[in-house]
Image (cartoon, rainbow, N blue to C red; front, side, top):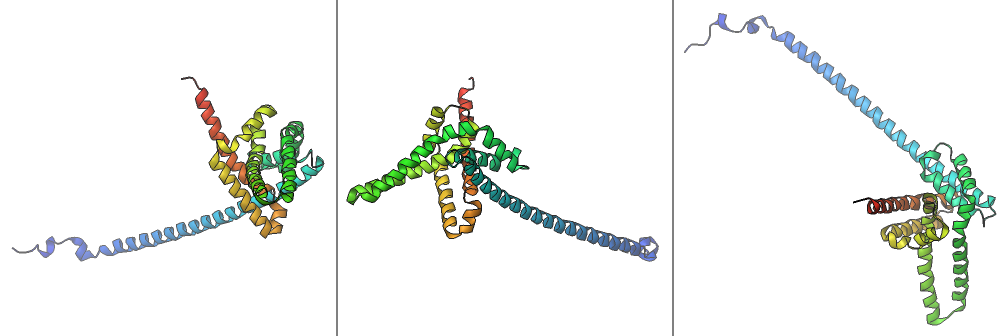
Length: 254
């Protein structure tokens, strides 16, 4: 069988009309390449903006740590230490973890310090009592010898660890609940049992803070109080939210 006659072949072959198509494809390729380069440039710009935003967020966080550290010290001194530490820890926790004070930490700190001063000191009084007893125990341990000394040391370590967890829970519990001092302290004393995982995480955070403070004294001066207040507060808040949700589910009508 013969192939098609020359007159039956596609006209494009003779007229060379393929060339405009190729030119069009070339132009489309250039446009696609330009578009691709544009997208790549915008992607690079977005990456740069994201990186710069991340750096600014870190700088704001560091600044907040230093600010709150200074505020807690000033709030403690404003109450003569004995009547200032509790309100200062409570107000510092508010500024660090509550978004409503993000734009004006100094104003939010002092407003919280003044508004809850009496209740904060009432709730914090047992901490001073426990601290005094621990200090007396250290004096007893120093005078003890032999197995009695070892037993006292083990007891002191356990009590100190439990007390550190309770103290870490104290600011968030004092802010979250309006119950009286007996109810609050019953809850606080059971805190390590209510959240053993949280208690362990709190101890790790406190130990890490102490290690950094010993190795880098400047870090301790700048954020030695605010950082553990922030880190443990986040852990405690998460646990308290779960406890409240469980309690709400238990009280819901079935």
